[in-house]
Figure 1: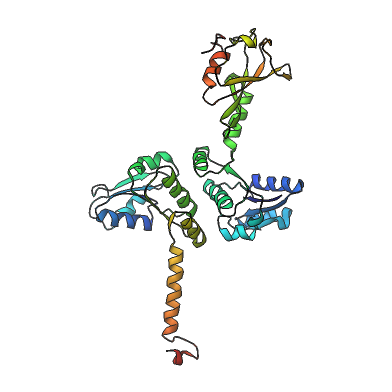
Figure 2: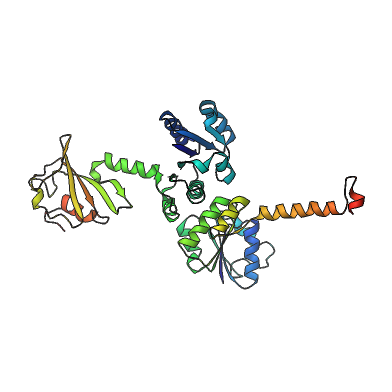
Length: 154
Length: 225
């Protein structure tokens, strides 16, 4: 599969490396040329030597998306640090370039939920964090960390 | 009308003030705390603090009952998405979005965010209008209707000066709708003779500009393309 990842931060670069390791064609697009270095963390060869692609440019620029190969993309991942950018470029990928699988990282849980209902696949790290924190608290409570009723509850 | 304006920059602040003066109910939403406090001194309860990208901020401002949402922040993605949720989630009848970077206009169109207003485009239009050598001035694009209205100034060397309108072979899909002569406008008839200095308005199908330019411009032979 051809996977295009826009936003090469901690999340985007890790996903990119993992997908490349699995044998997919991976192309990354980021405004910051320095983000290329993040792709090579832990790699023995350069990102390009391993077959990866990297383009400098903004996800809102049609030329940049096209240079990064959006026309061939089977999967489009929007993982910049801006919710609004991710939501907009995902819709561009869906509607203009008709990429089959489009996934947007959206930190705002309310909008992640609404756009999901509109047919955009969203991943919401905030929602995951909330759930993990809640269950961590429940676990701690279950082990009887505090309060007078704990002996009985445990 | 109840109107929500997002972004209390110069555009948003003045817009909100004008709309209030016209008797509308207005909420201006601003996400920068310091800017909010400044604007709030004048507009008081008509300003609300928050990031209008977030749904709850829009709901707190009463978007469910808003007749119009105008997004004029300095960020195109924000303006696009605020208008998108206003229309598609909250079913607001009218939206207006500001385009900061004209290159993003295609994205507004793609998401169906209309109308969108770009200061750069407006200034360009004005520039074309103020600099007559440009020859052909776009006055209006009627996108939905698939028509354009343009203005042409007839120079000394124009191929149509001294000719009867009825004798011109106007390109198919174009029509002369008025002539401005010495500060007065009139609707031309077949017998109207065009003069140097006339400003001619024409309505036309998109893509007919070049034909019209050939006819009315210096190289024009008055017989059409």
